[in-house]
View 1: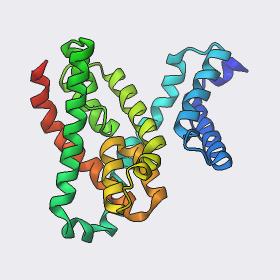
View 2: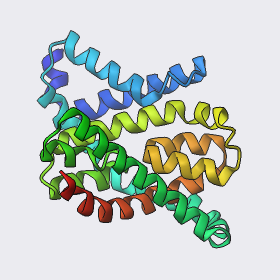
View 3: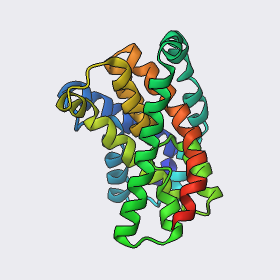
View 4: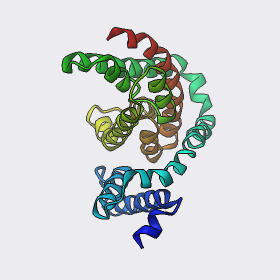
Length: 230
């Protein structure tokens, strides 16, 4: 049975989707921020591969089919943004300034930590695009001769952790303005954070969607500058 499943071209994709559905079920039942569906899915996939001694390459062959949906999913975030386009026209300076400050903070923090831990140039540029969506971050890492696989892991960890703590951080610092909440989540936790922002409200989701696009563009420009620092 194991051989039949692993030889299927869609084994990896099916396993990923099943584990994610389980993650959604756990989140719905527990209503806990720690029960992030993506985190639960990752842990379940790892457990299945280890328990049944399945090579990662076999899983990856099927799971790669899901990656084709990454770009269309990112583009579809333009729908809630279009519905709230009036907010962008009303607060252009605040919105662009907020996103720019978030992008700058992300890259400065990576620069400082890279110096502290003595990372080399390759490792440094690998982590620089950690706060933007995977579709853009992979391209930046590859162009800068970073380690693309580690960039993807860093982006996923950032998104998962950001979506888990987003609501709590906003409450802690009493950030209640929907536009500010959406910008903060989208700029720091990209697409994964946007799913959380959409749960909080349509305005938060729209602003978070805008942040993904704007932060991606700003990061492309910023990385070319920051990459020369180490």
